[in-house]
Each structure stands twice: as C-alpha cells, then as structure tokens.
Length: 116
Length: 115
Image (cartoon, rainbow over all chains, first blue to last red; front, side, top):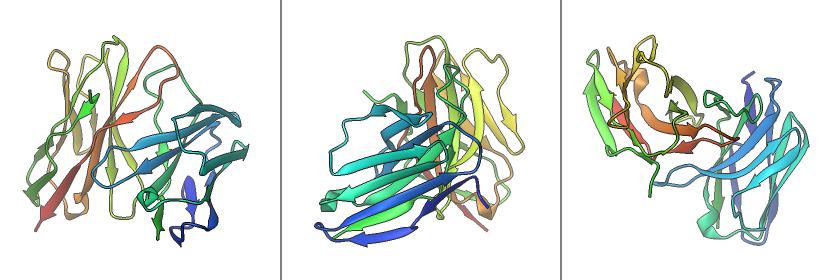
C-alpha cells in the first residue's frame, strides 16, 4: 500500500452535484495538503492542515470545503463546481510544518476531476 | 513574478544518454531548499532529490544529480544514462526557510526518452 492514497482516481460531475475527494496517509505524518494541478500551470496550493487544524487557505472559493477529522485523513468536499475547476487534485503529507527547508512532501496519485 | 522558472516545456533524449533539465529560482532568503519531483502518467509526484542552500556539494541520488549554482540561482537536474522509465513530467520546487513556508512549484518539463 502506498504512503498516500487518494480516492476516487477519476471523477466526473455536473455543476449541481456534490461529491467528496478522500485522502489517507499511512506515514504517521501530521501535516496534510491539497494541491490543484491544471494544464500548463504550476501546482497551486489550496489548503494546509497541521495536527488537524487548518493553517492555510490560499484564497480558495467556498465551493471547495476541506475537512480533516484526524492527522491521517483529509477530505475535499465539492459543490456547485464550474468547468474551470476541472483539474488533477493532489493530496500530500509531510511530517509536520517544519521551519526547516528540507521538509519534503509525499504525494498521492491524485483525483482527475472533470466538471461538465 | 515567478519564484521557480522552468524554461523547457519539453525535452527529448535517447536512451542511455544524459539530460539536463533547467530550473532557476528567485528568493531573497538565505536559507532555502530546492527539490525535484517526477510525475509519471500515473499522476503521483515522486520526490527525487533535495539541495539545501547551505550545502556546499551538489546533491546526488543514484542517476540523479543537482547542478547547484547559487550565484546564478539555478538548480538544474541532471539525469545520467536515461532509461525509458524516465519519461515523465519533472517539477522543480522551492521552500523558503524562516517560517512554516510550503513548497512552490515550477510549471514542469516533459521528458521523453526514446529507444
């Protein structure tokens, strides 16, 4: 089993649907992240959680709602999305929010989301 | 202004040859870290190599090495003896020190290795 697991791998939804993305990490880490990867753009950080507390919301629209019930699980609840929200959504974890520059992220394989 | 610049949208290399993927960065911090990640078609971002700003020697990890030129603010990835499985997107990223900063990524370079 990989360190960071994301489900589903693919998701197609209409603009009026409500769906959730799930991320689980088995690395014993305390920090978890949501990134959005759109074509031809750098990865965009969306949310950061450290010890279940949200520490960063990178001006993400309210139609994206994160939830972190414990340090191992992270959800991204989606509702009334727009076609431009179609992207690969990547979850990552790290030991914690270290002040040291060498803290690396471990990523899942992502959820490819298509909004019709 | 972009903090991480990868100027090569795509690179082609033949199997067993070496290839260099370019990365330049912009920061005013003295303490920072530079990372390279590989993203195959499966989507997962795989950590390859790390270089700290205070590290005097270039980082190496197997066939990967990082050509770190601090004065030029460049951190190029060198892959020696390319393999077909190296075909993927490659991302350069930076974490600036002094606080709980997160990784900032470049736009990536697509590497295709041909037989």
